[in-house]
View 1 (tube, rainbow, N blue to C red):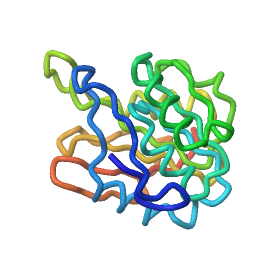
View 2: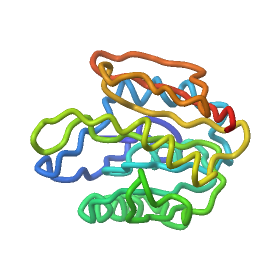
View 3: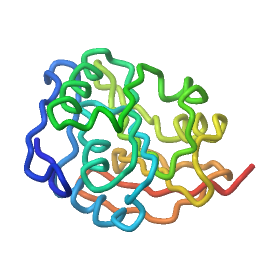
Length: 188
C-alpha cells in the first residue's frame, strides 16, 4: 500500500494484520476519490473515520490538507496509523483518537471540511453491516461538518441507500462491489 500523490508520493504504508478485518482501499478508488477532492483538499480539516491503516487521511495530508484526525475503535489499527504518521513525518499535523464512529464524535472538535468514512462491509461472522446511515446520523448530531463540507462514504454497492432528509447525496461513483457516496448536510 502506497501514497499515490502529493508530498509523500510513492512512500509505502504499513497495514494492519489481515486477521483484524481491515479492507484497504483499492488504488484506483483512492485515485478517483482524490481526483474528485483535489480542489477541496488544500488547507482543509480532514476527518478519517474507521481509519484502518490511515491511508486515506495520510493521502489527504500528502496532498495539502492542513490537519487530519484519525478515528478507529481497534487499538491495533490506531497503532499502525501512528507508525505510518511517524514514518512519513506527518504526526505534527494529525490527531489519532480511539472512538466508536457511530456514537462518540462530539469530542473530536472540528468543524471538518471533509469527512471520509470507510466502515467495514461485514462483521467477523460475515453478516452484512450497513454503517453509512448510523455514521451520518452521528455526524449530524455532533455538528462537526463545516457548512458546505462533504462527507464521503465508501460502502458496499448493495448497501441500502441512506434515507435521511438531513443529508443530500451530491455524487455517487461505483467501482465493482464498492461505491463512493458524497453527501452534503441539508439541515434538520
